[in-house]
Length: 147
Image (cartoon, rainbow, N blue to C red):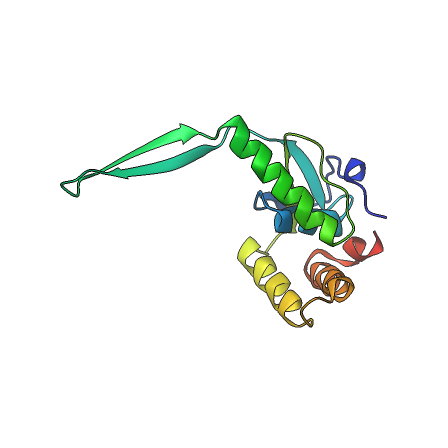
């Protein structure tokens, strides 16, 4: 079974590391990409955009650091999403990155993953995982399908 501890730093060759969304979906993609194709990185403080509009319609924009409660709520959301697919939650205070081979963009990978998920009947979580693994394998190479 896929495990977070396998997602250690690796040098899979020519390409680049990109941040995956800090969501359950991003975590699932990292797990399915597997060892050598995804890695954990320490979470950095996240700034959240706040827009306040006064009675006159003027807007003030400021950026504030995400609160501990917001980080905890996100962690619960990620854990809940992963649990639906039978995966354990990630370690605390980490995010995930995906290795992209040279010549590939995250937009290309994301599109392939979205199409893969949409090709599976609603509620077929095992089918979704299989389709995502196949899509990752087609872009990242067969290594991602072996985990």
